[in-house]
Image 1 (cartoon, rainbow, N blue to C red):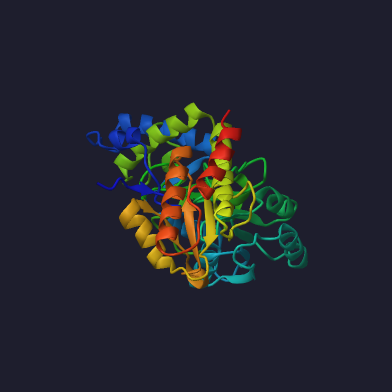
Image 2: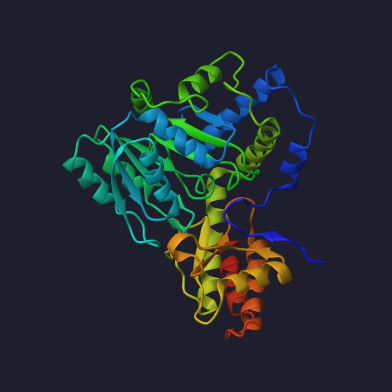
Length: 384
């Protein structure tokens, strides 16, 4: 028998309470029962987002929320700034190309964060920039950008700051309002602990000013329609929602509130510390920075002489632990251990154990327990 452990940065493990909630008989989405649930979900999303702005929901992946940000904020030919340090930063560029925006693309080496001062300088040099697109938690590399510093760099300009926090929301702290982040997009299948299929967007008053001027085509992802439906006495969505996922989200957000947001962030910080300590204890090299902000996923360089695909396949098929590989130019060069969402110390110990055993079987020199003991040391010190 193989017991399976999903240790990817999305989809992530789902609590049994959430699965059971989602399995309840479906309710109609134009009823008071659904509106009551939806209103409760919206308030709890604002709690997780740390915002007083409304949070719009769509039945889509996180990429749908990203596209909605482009089409609702921009008009053809608008000047935008994109700061990218990985695969999902590139997605802002790709969307800007599709919709005919005039974009200034600032690319940073994968595995390194965006430099906030560069954004401030770019805005000073070109006041025509209307929107700044950046990634909070870059899932492809494990880097978490300093959104507080980026928010400060954008503050005072006329530009609207948009952050992709799809893998960061609920695992890496993001103070939407306090840090001046106008638009934050997120998705359901990571730290929010439900399956893929829901996406969320918070929108500031400053951002709504651009929405009113936007002329890019939109229908399903029209924020104005979503806002109108949300503002009704019985709040709802403009189009049919993913009802069962919303029921599951209601339970997941209850669990987050019960744990407490600060405790959620602290748990993720400890998981990141323990994973990085274990990796270094095995003599492996981190790809993501050794930084407490990097609490959603740990990226590790594949050691010389080891085939990444063979390593991850062995870990999955023999030991039941699913890790993620690299993407784009770092495919085959790194593997990623996800720990955003429904994870605790047991999951990390299992994942590192499987990694040690697989490395040894593939002939890589490793002392069994050398990684696990380092993770245990972190947990022993931090979980008191």
